[in-house]
Image 1: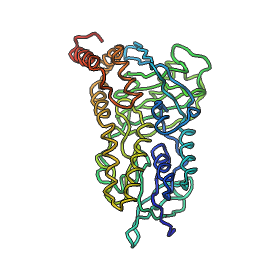
Image 2: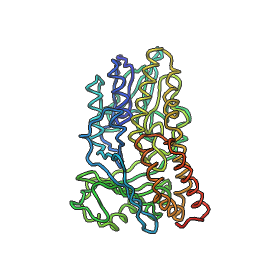
Image 3: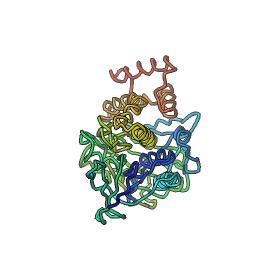
Length: 397
């Protein structure tokens, strides 16, 4: 035990936690960043240029620049969608996350390796964070005092489950991927500047499978809401079908990915959530890095305000700010996933809709700007009627 009291203990050193730690440390707050260093999250690694601008991230961290997305329908029909004016950046999470943690440390945050165990409370009412020291869940228990705690410890957040009401209401996609050595040459089934997304029931009954290039390596994975679905078997099937079963496998990773933002992100006293712990992964697409870092920033801002005012009510502002900026996008993507991903007939029609140039342009405009694009009402109207035609079966799949 130690009597030192930190302004904030950030539990979890992924994009959300590292961003929150950096934001608070550069403002002069005393920050402890507690991270489980033994885990890399399975992730496609896509980041929009907006992330590089918003969070001052150098392009040197990108391992690939994607210029096209290919959607593969249940019947094997391909729809190639050019990114347009811009690109989708790809990062390797082990390198990217460590860069973010190191930046937080440079700003003044203290780093320790360990796993959160529980929150206790001292006689004076200040919270105490108990954690296991080192790279094992069974290490020696240590503890520190904290005025505030940011829980950024992943989808199955122990901070959330122990400290925040209704945290057990989260729903998840179970994801699995394999990092492999990229083929040296492009081919019809693999390109170094193209992301391939498979909307096929055998590969995923309710989400999608993917092949994402990362320069010298590639991520091949899938996800599903169905417990018991054979994720590893699905990836093996995809690798065999594309010939990527012949390239070297570097590592295998799996984890749950949240589907919806949790209804509450704070306990009204000293805890606020960020990133996967708060449920901020975009439905339908599974995009999480940008939203995790945004969640880390708003959580850091909320803690800063709480420290400055002495009022824990400021913690609730984190969720309000995030949902005001991105809640509508999440709602639209959730509706899309609930309808179009349910069976192969709908998936076939969904891919068919994506052949439309209006859909392609608005999709990537929204991706690049991280908001719904409102400036093209005629395009939205055309898309509405095309969706209606597919919904009623009047348009060919």
